[in-house]
Amino acid sequence: MLYAIFGLLAIDIAQGSGGASTTQGAIERIAGDGYGRFLLIALCIGLLALVVWKALQAIAGDPVEGTEATDRAEFAIKGVVYAGALIAAVTVLIANWSSSSTSQSGSGGDTKQQATATVLEWPAGQFLVIAAGLGIIAFGFYELWSHTIEGGFMDRIDTSSVSEEAGHTIDVAGRVGYAAKGATTALVGVFLVIAGWQHDPDDTTGLSGALTELGDAAWGSVLLWIVAVGMFGYAAFSLVEARFRRAS
Image (cartoon, rainbow, N blue to C red; front, side):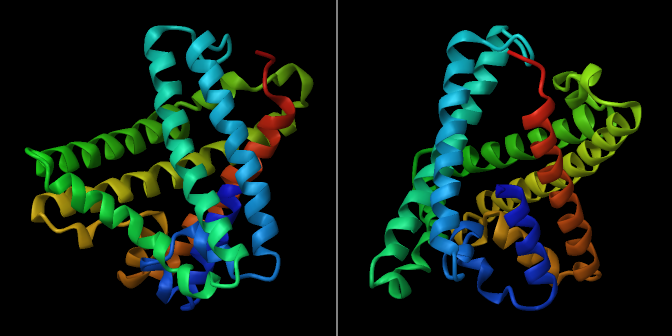
C-alpha cells in the first residue's frame, strides 16, 4: 500500500501537479483526498504491524531472512525506520482529523529539515549528516545489487506453491520494484550528503521532495513514470510475498 502511494505520487508530480511536494511528504499528500484519513488509518495499522514484526525478528531472528547478529541488527534498524514513518503517519492523521487540518497539513514536510538542522548544529554534525546520507546511498545500491541483479528476494518465496509462469512473473515484478526502490532510496541519500556538505538543511528532502527534484530535471517526467511503474511493481510483489512467503 505504501509503495503504491509512492507510485501515485510520482505520477502526480510527472503530470505537473506535485509542486507542493517539496514541503509535503507522501503521507501528508494523501491526507487531503476524499478518503485520505481512512487510508491513513490503514497505513498506520500496517506500519504498526511492520514495527512489531521487525522487533520480533530483531529479538528472535528469522529462519527465512537470517538469524545472525548482523541480520538482527538490520531488522532493528528497519524497525526504527518504520517506527519513524509510523510516528509521522499518526501525527498527520491527528492533524488532519481535526478542524484545523488545513493550517497544519504542511508542517509535517518540514520535520526532516528541522531534524537535519538540529544534527548539523551538533559537534561533527556535518559529518554525521554526510555519513547518514552515504549509508542510505549504500543501502540503495545494496538493494539494487542484492535484489534487482541477484534476485535474492526470491529466497523468501515458497516457489513450490506457484507455477513456473507465476514464479517468473513474481521474479520480474520483484526485480523491477527493487530497482525503483533502491534508486529512489539512493537519491534521498544524495540529497542528505548535499545538505551536509553545504551545511544547509534546506537541501535535505524526503522521498516526495526527491521525486519533485527528479521531475525538474531533463527527461524528469519520463523518469518519474519509470519510477512509478517500479513502485507499482514493488507494491504488487509485496502483495504476492504476503501470500506466498515461506513460513517463518
